Amino acid sequence: MVSPFRQFAVVTAKGNFRENVMSIIDSVRNTLVPVHREGYKFVAIFFVASLILGWIADPLFWIGMVLTAWCAYFFRDPERVTPLDEDLVISPADGRVSSVVRMVPPAELGLGTGEMLRISVFMNVFNCHVNRAPVKGRVVRKVYSQGSFLNAELDKASSENERSGLVIETSHGAIGVVQIAGLVARRILCWAEENEQLDAGERFGLIRFGSRLDVFLPAAARPLVSVGQSAIAGETMLAEFGSSKGPVVSRRD
Image (cartoon, rainbow, N blue to C red; front, side):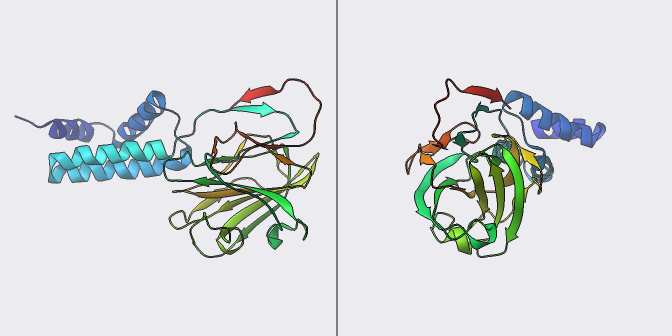
C-alpha cells in the first residue's frame, strides 16, 4: 500500500513545485488569517524541509507539516480595527504591557533629557509580530542602534539592547517608538522612512521571534493601561491626551 506521503510526493513532483508551495500558502491564508509577505520564504523553507524529512520517514513529514503550519501562524497578519482619534495612542504590538514608567528616552532619539511617559509591550513567540504605528504623524527621525541581546523584559534593554527607533511628529509633539531585540529576536525590520506620513494602526515593521516595543510620550499623555494587561496592536488604547470630542471613529486594516 502506498503511503499518503508517497502519494503527495508524486503529485508534487509531477506538478509545478512553486505553484504547489504558493497554493499551500494561499490555503493557509484563506483558512486562518493572512500571512505577512515576510513569512512566505520561511513557510516555503519549512515545507521543503517537510518533503525531505518525508523521504526519510513518513511520520517526519507530518511533523514537518505541523511545524510549517506553526510558521505560517507565527507570521500571521490579521486585520485590526483602529480608533481614528489623534488624541489616542494605540498599541504598536501584540503582547503584555510590561512597564508604565516615566523616564528619560534613549539619547539617539533626540527627544531631550526630560522625563517622558514610557509604555512597554513585551511580545512572546506566540504573539503576532507585525508592528503598527501608535499615532498619526510624520516620521522625522529613524535610527538603528547596535547593542546587546539581553532579555527584552529587563528595564535596561531600552538603552543597551540592539534596537530601531522612530520619532513621529504629531499634533501633541514628538513621540518615540522603539523596536527592541531580545534573547531570541535578533532580526528587526522597519519599513517606515524619514519624512513618511503614517496613520495610526498602519504597519511599519516586524520583529522575528518575540521582543518588545517601547512608546515614549510627552508628559501630558495619560496612561490607560497597567502592567500585566494584554495589548492588541492597532486596537488597544495605551494612552490619551486630553480631549472633549465625542465618539471615536474606527478604521479596519
